[in-house]
Figure 1 (spheres, rainbow, N blue to C red):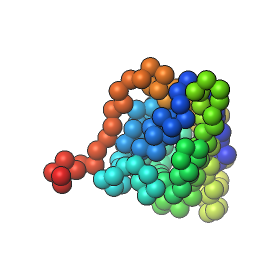
Figure 2: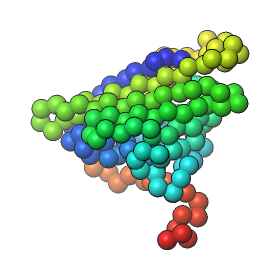
Figure 3: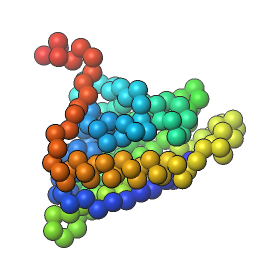
Figure 4: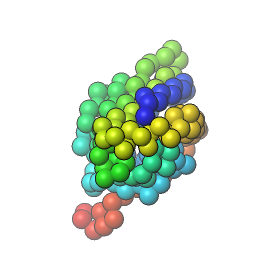
Length: 164
């Protein structure tokens, strides 16, 4: 599917936007309307190697996503797998650009690349327009969080508080 791309302008410094995006424990605060059953894959949810597993209703099934590259403060690349038997590769890329007046232009691109014939067939019935609408809403919610400087609710791995 895709690539599905959406962009938005946020009235916040690029570093602040980057810090929120690179922390996967904050992702449900603006993506929970289309990502459900969100679970962190490791105790430290920030930076390269951080990962999450979630159900993406629009793309059909469960997906894993791991931060594989992070170029502070301009780019975050996540790769993973999902779909039937976890065999559909997926990529999410976040690009951040400075604008005058401490504003940030943010672009997110989501792409799945099915190789199995059954996966390619089922992808025909998935709606790219619906997924684009979901990403647009996520970016709008992210902008609202950052511009209003609201406290972001973060997830933790079960039992992490006992480790110290």
